[in-house]
Image (cartoon, rainbow, N blue to C red; front, top):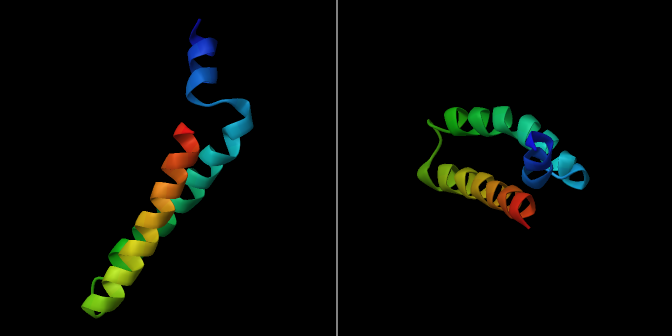
Length: 63
């Protein structure tokens, strides 16, 4: 039964989504901490791009 739950949460066809999350989380952290001293417009742009990327990953995970 536990394997059934794992297959429901992360189907084999969507294993790439997990890899994307693992690769992108450090990148997002660098962006969030790296743009702190930039202008407000630049911060909002980078935060927006990161949020769009996060939303895209979340959508693919749930599909």
